[in-house]
Amino acid sequence: MRMTPQRAAIDDLLDGTDDFRTAQQLHGMLASAGSTIGLATVYRTLTALAEAGRVDVLRNDEGESLFRRCLRAEHHHHLVCRDCGRTVEIAADVVERWASRIARENGFIEIDHTAEIFGTCSRCAAARYAGAQHA
Image 1 (cartoon, rainbow, N blue to C red):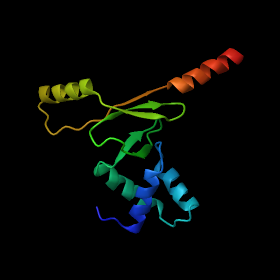
Image 2: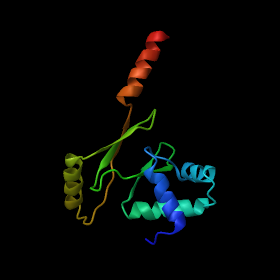
Image 3: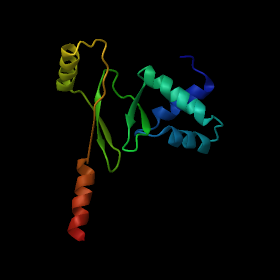
Image 4: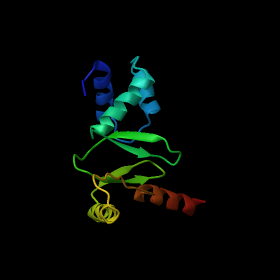
């Protein structure tokens, strides 16, 4: 992937962003910083970065893609808080073994997979509990 000034700006933005963002949110952040990069360029760049394994992609409940810089170089999965969006990258050997076994049993090769686990993180659960106590 050739590094154009537009791609470099998007790459730099991802380096400074800790949580998952939509392409529209990232485009808005670039625009707020004075960039004239188009939304289509943001989408194309994010897609290329995802294919290169440099960004993680999740789908939210509405089916919208969310992007974030990969923190781990190796294959991994995510725990995602539905309330605050906090994400933890996890290794899941049992998932890897299961995916390989299922593929093998069905005659598939060259498999790829993702596993995202959505729930409520301990901070949001504590805040919810504290709010219920004061209600």
